[in-house]
Amino acid sequence: MSASMKECLQLQLLEMEMLFSMFPNQGEVKLEDVNVLTNIKRYLEGTREALPPKIEFVITLQIEEPKVKIDLQVTMPHGYPYTALQLFGRSSELDRQQQLLLNKGLTSHIGTFDPGELCVCAAIQWLQDNSSSYFLNRKIVFEPSTQAKPVKNTFLRMWIYSHHIYQQDLRKKILDVGKRLDVTGFCMTGKPGIICVEGFKEHCEEFWHTIRYPNWKHISCKHAESVETEGNGEDLRLFHSFEELLLEAHGDYGLRNDYHMNLGQFLEFLKKHKSEHVFQILFGIESKSSDA
Image 1 (cartoon, rainbow, N blue to C red):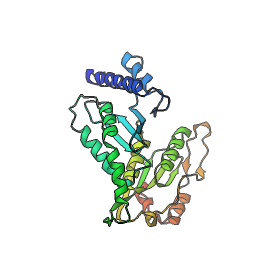
Image 2 (tube, rainbow, N blue to C red; image 1 turned 135 degrees about the vertical axis):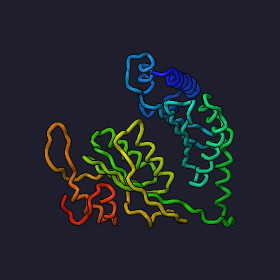
Image 3 (cartoon, helix red, strand yellow; image 1 turned 45 degrees about the horizontal axis):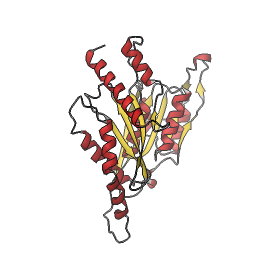
Image 4 (cartoon, rainbow, N blue to C red; image 1 turned 60 degrees about the horizontal axis):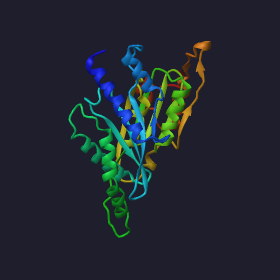
């Protein structure tokens, strides 16, 4: 273990202790992996050889004026605080544009810190001191008398390939994240595993970032399609919800559960959703027939 890695993880544990003292009530700090701090301590003590997962959590902040809540999603890379912290603030009371502006302001503020400085507490303080103006601006934008120019949004569709998707907890996480965000698409479980996610660019990118945590190795985004739109993007969607896709499997491998999905059925599914062209991109096979 290098001294720099050890120092980073020790500083991360120190900052987490500070946060738990600042937010002592249950549910205020929600860890993505409840065992992550224990695993980091074991790693530092030398009783665990594998590098522990990154610390990822959400802090719910109560803003006094106006009376709203902001969820601050935080990911600490292993090299933090000597590498950049990943932050994203979200509130149901903010429209999409104001949420983007809020996060740009937050990112800009955190960017002023020098490498080695802990900055989660500073991010919280900045949100408590500055977020109210973004909520107030939202009211102004939607005044009937205001003739606002149409805002162009980027609608994105990502086609994600994984060697396999089996585990129940992983499948549940994918579905939960897809339904929490304003995205549609599907997750085809089995071998291979295919995920399609579509929606506004920032929502798709957040989905991609979240499901890859902590370190999903055998996964890649094989193809992405984007288009600029001034609307809500509903007319661009090929799917109406985000659901799990279960197809028949070829072969029976017993307890190994190592089965190959019926690609012929998957091709028919793509055809129904006007996405036949993606078949060759995902598998390198021309879609001349429905036989797998």
